[in-house]
Image 1 (cartoon, rainbow, N blue to C red):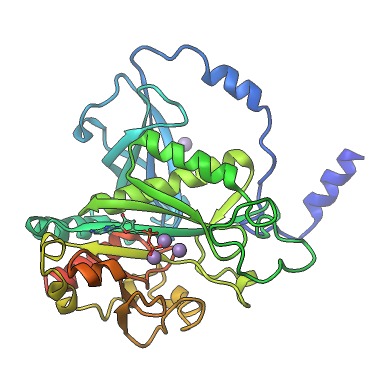
Image 2 (image 1 turned 180 degrees about the horizontal axis):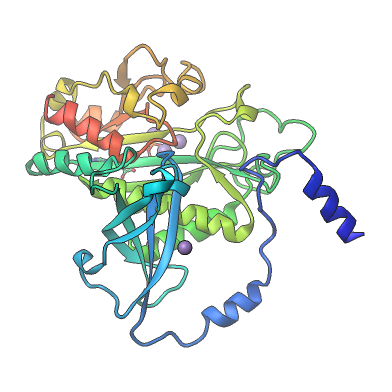
Length: 378
Ligand code: ADP
Ligand code: MN
Ligand code: MN
Ligand code: MN
Ligand code: MN
């Protein structure tokens, strides 16, 4: 019977989507606990190198053994991988390089093990097409004296093993949105186990997680990272995304950062990555005039990984968004491109919120763009 089924599946030309593939209930967790619970090795470090692949929105990782846990980022050896398998090189000349740029305690393995955020370089040691960090780091260096702070609000949707939003009925839609945002109760929210676990994982890794909340669409959540100075914003958000994917993987659940998954095209909020921004001058008394002076336009092509196309589905002017082709700003207005929080307007200083970046944006591209146009005036 089982063999027949396997043969049948092997000859069945129908394919699963990438969002369904290989997701299952995790097996043997007690066995995993048994081995991860063994007394840790006294000196060895398992270092997991993490990088952004050729899509500009998905992450890859691989792990190696180091004799000791590095105390500074320069101590991590340059490593390589097969870029032809990640959309970052052609097969004949596929070595692509990983350079460690930030490291964090590993909440999965514990002890002296490390998660290592990396930049990617091609065979000539030039940044790959989706390595937006290289340029961002340069820009941030140039405005370091302005002490730029960022805080990003990462929205996402949890998906069941079949690729369907977690908790949604399989043969219809949930009751319309309203009670789910910051909701409490089994009929309001789904997946809190994942959210709580991810929060602790971020804290263990030393990330500046600011908070978390259930969002407007059922199965949708948000976490915020910040305030982070300069390039650390991108490093920490990417690492927090990695932790979320990994935690959800252990629950057999999928995370999507798609700003508007097809099934949510009707009367459902999409997902964004609101980006809160300030500099020393904006935070100081009278900072409001610096917020007003900032140039906010022309950013859209950097606000999602597909040159602005992903955001077309989301920034419709409805569902708490602004229209994609019209720049606007306002105090406490969630239908604007840029919102000035009420408390900031009252105190005349603080920060502003750019509501346009897509949930699948590259935070290096977004913060780099804001820093360049708003604070370098380019
Ligand atoms: P919202 O009311 O838009 O939902 P959240 O509470 O979700 O806001 O998130 C607020 C974000 O603003 C956090 O990421 C926080 O780090 C960030 N933030 C707060 N103050 C500043 C500041 N002075 N500069 C930059 N970011 C800030
Ligand atoms: Mn190999
Ligand atoms: Mn928020
Ligand atoms: Mn939100
Ligand atoms: Mn917001």
